[in-house]
Image 1 (spheres, rainbow, N blue to C red):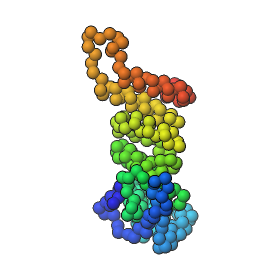
Image 2: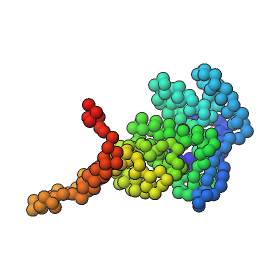
Image 3: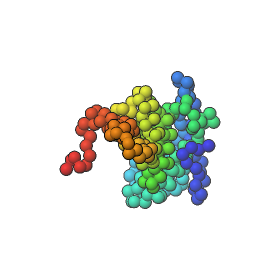
Length: 260
């Protein structure tokens, strides 16, 4: 049932209290939203009181008694991150995502293209924030392919608005995961959306690098009888053209060596 996470051994039992409802259907897309039940809403008020107290011990006690409260887990994860306890923080963030995923609507298909997540409720915003932190934890552990796939899923929930600004770093994960062909296809496809990919310098430069890497992996040694013109590789020319276009559109982007 879950898409991003699965229940880990040793997790405590708890009543999650977050469910997804079908809000409406727009342009052929089923729009869903998360909502809390009455019991969870009462617990949420207690959490806000602990949070406003600015006392880490109060938040720790709250999270101990409510192990599947998403906000409590995210807040405790922030505390552990400041302490350098990344493994504990990653576990708490994953538990927060799992809490939301367990509330998926029966008609919500994570693999479908015609479903969207409404982003005008606090619950939806909290789910997106949990996904972003989970992506960062995956990347920190070196699981760049898993981070990329989670980026794809999160972006597919709201591709028109991109509330997590995933377009700002999805290209980085694609390059790290060596998904060069997917990146070039994604950039061409996403130019049709309200926030075109061509407006992002990171994607422009990442596309040029992806084309170069694709050319290197498929390049064949030239024959001795080939002229210099024949020895030129079409893939390298495409990479050069993409790089020139990126520099032309974003001339202020410089490398570290240019700043010295």
